[in-house]
Length: 113
Length: 112
Figure 1 (cartoon, one colour):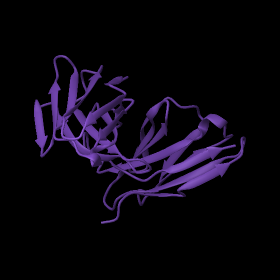
Figure 2: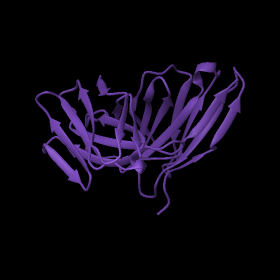
Figure 3: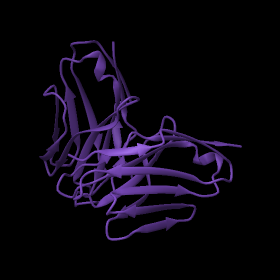
């Protein structure tokens, strides 16, 4: 059974650009969550999607957005990149019921220069 | 919203000794508490979890305890080995929020 796959693994972008990250969940999982991981802030919740609907959103500016497709794959977009957006972006998939185990992808390392 | 605090931030133990990491949470509606281990450069992986209807759970050298009244839960690793060196994250989940709220992490180093 394939795990959670995130692409690309590494990205270098310039301030002001935008970026799209992709996450393919484990087959059968309908929930995808996104987290930002930085050394100082740990893992911060960005948003969660289930069956193409956003069920929750974290405390991030509107430059951060996401969506989920009918095959449960998810994308997140960050517009007008800032230096502080440099981080490891992790997605996690689960079956989507309350308190079900979440499986993480290997993450996308975004560097903004 | 949920706030999870985790202590200590770093922990160094001699191989064979025990390690204990403690977390507190603020949302009394949270009822699922997973622990993740993240080795350097790798993805976080679930090592054990506990739900609020039980007070303790064990899996070989790892155990987790939960005190709902005090709103704290702990990870216990016995007979530590070098491969236990990693960053450990606790998390809490309110079933109505569809998210995990993480602690800041504990870097565990097992000295040979």
